[in-house]
Amino acid sequence: MTDPVEPTDDSDQAGHPHQLLIRLTAGVVAVVLVAAAAWILLGNRHPTRSVEAYCDKIVAAETLRSALATGDAQEIRTAVDQFQGAVDVAPIEIEPQTQTLVDYAEELASTLGTTGGSEAETRAALTEAVRRLDDRSADVTAAGRAVDAYARDTCHLDPGGTSPTTG
Image (cartoon, rainbow, N blue to C red; front, top):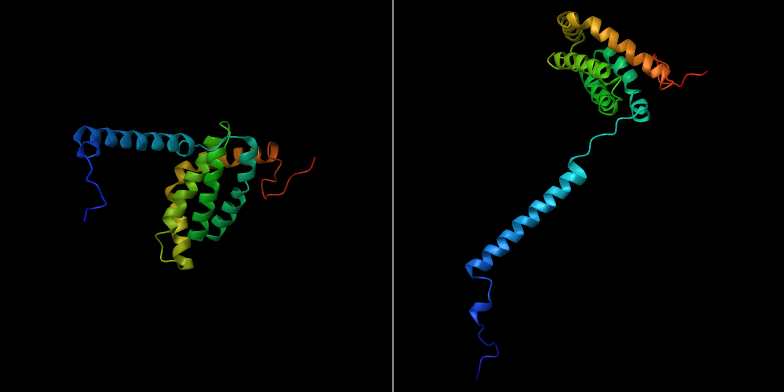
C-alpha cells in the first residue's frame, strides 16, 4: 500500500533563513505602518479650538463655582475635570485665563482630597489652601473676570449662571 501524501520538497518551504528574514521584515514594516497610520488618524487629534466649542464647555465654570462653594473635594475634582475641557478648546485669547482658573481649582481640590472629610476639616483645609495660594489671588480674580466677560460678551451667557443673556 502506498502513502497518499507525497513528500514535499523542502526548498519550497518558508523555513529558509532568507525567506524567514523577508517575512519578518515585512511583518515589522506592516506593524510600523499600521501604528503610524493609527497615530496620524487617532493619536494626533487635538481638540479644535473654537468659540463655539468653548462656549459649550464654559458652562462648567458655574459647576466649578457651585462645587467650590460646597467644599466637597469630589465635586470640585469632577468640576475641574469638566472645566479642563474648556481649556482644551479655548480660543487662544482666553486660554491662559481659563487655565489659571483650572490650575487654582486643581490645587484646591488636591488639598481637599487630603482631608478626613468632616465639615470642620474641609473648611480648615480650604481656608489653609486659600491662604497658601493668596499670592495668586490677584491673577485668579483677573482671570475669573476675564472668563466671565468672555462668557457674557462672546458666549452670551450670564456670568453668574449658564442661561443665555438677552439683548
